[in-house]
Image (cartoon, rainbow, N blue to C red; front, side, top):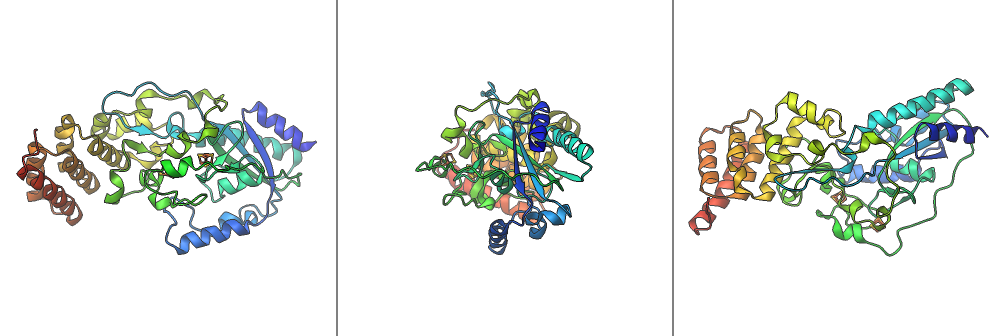
Amino acid sequence: MLKKVIGQKAAELGIDLLGFSGARELDEVKRCLVKRRDEGRQTSLEWQDIELRVNPRLLLPGANTIITAAISYFTANHARTSGMCGTLSRSAWGTDYHRVLGSKLKALAQYISESTGTTTKVFVDTGPPVDRALAIEAGLGWQGKNCAVISPDYGSWIFVGHIYTELELFHDRPLTRECGECELCLKACPTGALGEPYVLDPMRCVSYLTQMKGFVPNEYRHLMGVKVYGCDTCQEVCPVNRDVKPSQISDFYPNQASARPDLLELIQINNRGFKALFGQTAAGWRGRTVLQRNALIALGNLKNPAAVQPIAACLTDVRSVIRGHAAWALGQIGGHISLAALLQAIERETDPVVREELGAAIHGLEGYVSKGGVST
Ligand code: SF4
Ligand code: SF4
């Protein structure tokens, strides 16, 4: 009865899916996380304390049930595709979901606490809980071979959050559905991050690479295409994601300027402009430098000579990561103007890592120029 009342309240709040699981220690998840850490595949974006991640009672002593909620963020595709534009993952097209889902879960948790006199705790992505494992335990979806949670009605376009509660509630069962013979996501992954079904190497995943700080390993840059934040490739190809119900939340409908950002504007944007463009989105938290670095990689991949002058201006930027990736981008585009800018830059550059980037770009272009292969 109480479960039904909570479900009705959740629906009133605009929550699409709700499931209940026991607040038990997740032994299998712990084994996977420990193995990944020991193999050096734990990313800086993950919560580092594995015990906190898998033991609910360390987060809420007395927790008996975890209520897992999901909302769809699937919206119609945006139209702007011409020019030198980058792409953001669908998850960052609209208003930051941490705010949207967070406010719904806080309202639901408050309702539960007040009506039952029990303690609750809310988590939306930023805390230790392992979202996917809990969503599967609660029967919201099954684990796809791309490691996403796939719900029958909304596909994998869902944001997930949790309420830990002291209440004893009847638990839902995990779904029995599976991917079957399909392997489309494995074949589509640009970096081989999905080397085998159900195993994601986060260090090779473009989604992680676009969010990590510092220099992106050279071998992945040309595989990132024009992705400025996140990667949806393994979700876009998934047949389950084709005919899904759209999101009922208008906040997730795309803001064209930030969902398909103009790359030249992005590499020149100041802090105020960045905040205005991305401050409300889920991409904003990573900050201007990371997105500008990704924009330089995207411009290098587009190889449009019209971008050379604005990229060359980045060779004098105070941030070494921007100078280094500008050098790489010019090396990809090529031409006499790029080479001249790189030669000038290496004369004044003192940072050894940037000097290495400049040297590699120059080396590549000198060979190309000597073969007469440039036109700009
Ligand atoms: S998000 Fe992109 S890079 Fe990561 S596993 Fe999926 S397709 Fe591969
Ligand atoms: S693309 Fe195929 S294998 Fe991959 S998650 Fe979707 S259904 Fe599963």
